[in-house]
Image 1 (cartoon, rainbow, N blue to C red):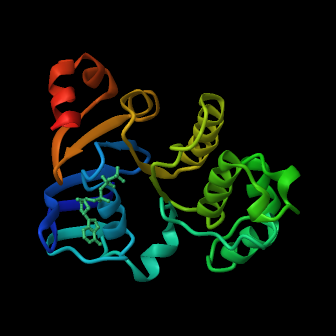
Image 2 (image 1 turned 30 degrees about the vertical axis):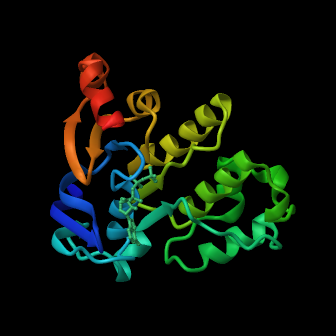
Image 3 (image 1 turned 90 degrees about the vertical axis):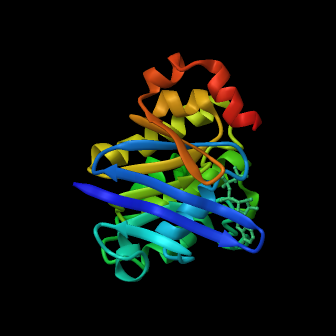
Length: 227
Ligand code: ATP
């Protein structure tokens, strides 16, 4: 079953084609990486899937529906620009966000799953960068999402934290979720994803398995990242 689909999607801002005919589709249970350099159109893709913006042309579907509205409650998202209320306690914030979902799980369960139990009564402001990312994952997981959209979720993390983060995110896939995540780290994309979609200039330039990607001519990939 197809969880999300973008067909020939264009998103144009004055003077910029953020997306220039993007085709991406993700099936249930897949972990797919959107790999691309700065400005490739990754964040724009997530904003479209969440219904935060509309395409200039083309078709965007999530669970067969137009993005936004009720379908949004089936998605857990981690966005790059996410601002958090710094003075709230970790547990309070997770509880508050959980209330917005019809299928929220227990707060303590989510905190345990993201190794935040010991930080539950700390303020958001006091968390380290990696802990803050885990809190964002907890907020993405609290509604028992069927789809996780993660925009460069491990960008600020060291190697050990990345590993833990992906173990925790993967556990939700074992529970039946699907993940689309953005990264510009080829190694991470190859290690985590079942399939890697390489985007550049708002278009898909490769849609392949991690194996094929790592054996792909390095020159071709370098071209994508240095273009
Ligand atoms: P990064 O890896 O740097 O986060 P990205 O792949 O997420 O990059 P996008 O943020 O989707 O890329 O941006 C794609 C292009 O669209 C960029 O050239 C960006 O400047 C442009 N863009 C995105 N949002 C807007 C906007 N609201 N107004 C004008 N231009 C925009």
